[in-house]
Amino acid sequence: MLRQVCLDGAGLILMPTWLVGEDIGSGRLQAVLTDWRVHPQVEMDMGIYALYLPNRRYSLRVKTFIDFLVKRFGNPPYWEETMI
Image (tube, rainbow, N blue to C red; front, top):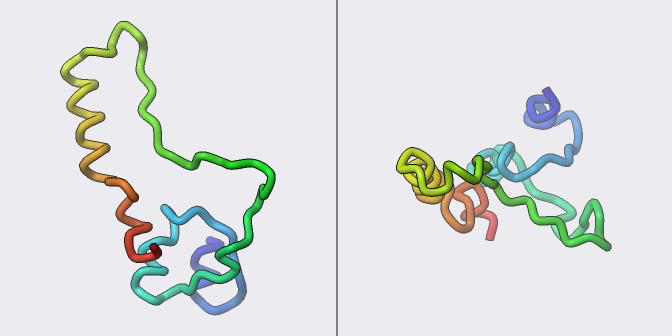
């Protein structure tokens, strides 16, 4: 809902790039205050993590899924490629 309100031109929002990156890349939204951080004293890692049980570590299904995630999201994630 907040994203749509912002797309309608009604104000600013603070949202993770994975939610609005495509809108920024396409020009529907514009990133502002890019140097500002929510928690400037804390270096926050906003990565995506795959959690699995220790006994599933070498499971072919788990490995295949993790490989898919790495390929799908990339480094940097696809939604941030146009913002760098």
